[in-house]
Length: 159
Image 1 (tube, rainbow, N blue to C red):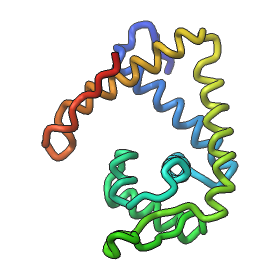
Image 2 (tube, one colour):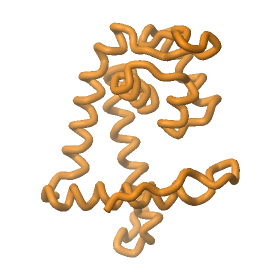
Image 3 (cartoon, rainbow, N blue to C red):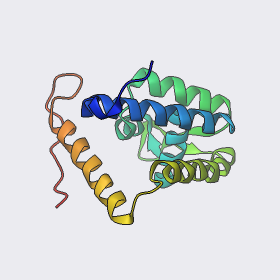
Image 4 (cartoon, rainbow, N blue to C red):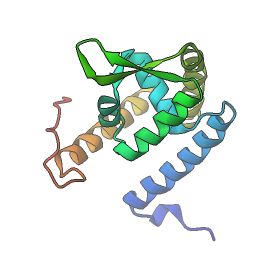
């Protein structure tokens, strides 16, 4: 069944685009035996070098069960390791292993390929505007209630 995309509400169109984008990313990541969540974890740990599981879950907006399951799989596969925090032995820090670090270039390459597909035919100004709009949407959602019903973090000024 084909629907007229010109008459889909914006919210529905965002869902359609997101679904197509995730399917494309999933197929690209399968070539490297990763999934999108694992790639996000690798990239985040690459940028921060060491994070607690709680910090990582908050950064990636993942639930504790989801991040725990993903981290355990990645640890078994040799992508990440856990080490005690030097200042608080109760906290375990997550770090990339050599295998994890070696995947970063693949993650970056796939991200670049996805951006190339997503922004084909758009000017630099349109890309910048799109990013600004996404940040605004993210901020709008962040000031609403979080999943537990508590007021979420306040909006950042992006002007």
